[in-house]
Image 1: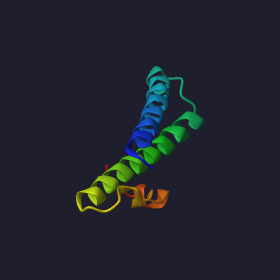
Image 2: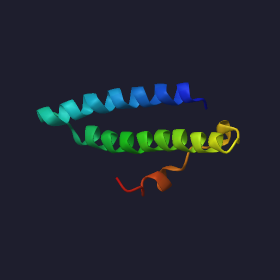
Image 3: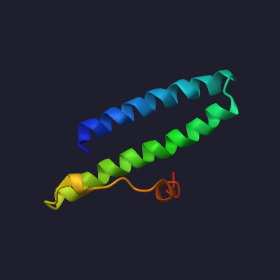
Image 4: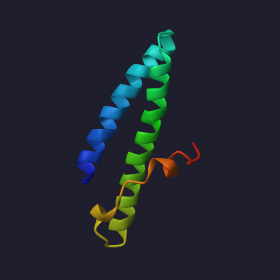
Length: 80
């Protein structure tokens, strides 16, 4: 996946996250909204990790497209 597509995915996730955070701040968020916020956090972490891994591969003259998305179970354990 190229950087442009990853950035587009990140932009979409951030936009959705901002809308849900607005609901949360206004006191209108449901449990479904809160669950989706947790899912978005993991999805954003996965996208950002993919960008970093691709750039690291490129730095060492390895095809950055060889970077793969890390499993959800791995990025859920990342320290925030």
